[in-house]
Image (cartoon, rainbow, N blue to C red; front, side, top):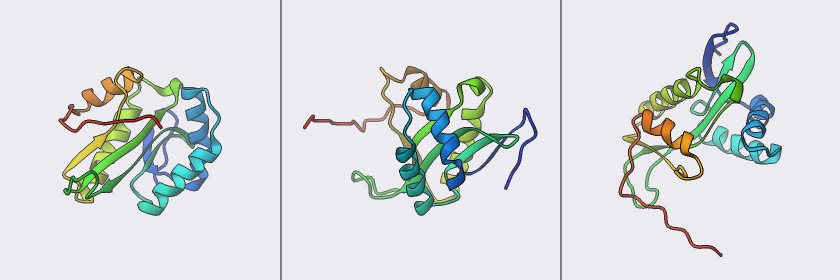
Length: 151
């Protein structure tokens, strides 16, 4: 397991002990306290691939996280693709390339697992900063469109 000195950001796989820290970062970003949601999400990704989803640590403190997986055959797309579900960086650490480091780590993990592409979904009107982050990371819009119907 990688450790970091204060001021140095290191990456390591997420684990169950990170749920509280991930929840705290999410609460800073969303204003919502959702420990059950994060326990469910992290448990899911640990079952799928315990080494792929990552946290960024400074010293012993979790300052960011990225969860994702490799899937094939989803939505009629047969090639293996990495899917990034969520990215969170502590607001006090934003602007320090934490997200970029997490993305680079996830991309390497996806490639090692045979992914031919990496995809994510972003609400470009409600998440303009996140949309800009992924564009700066080399992501482009595709002809794949999300369709939605309220029920």
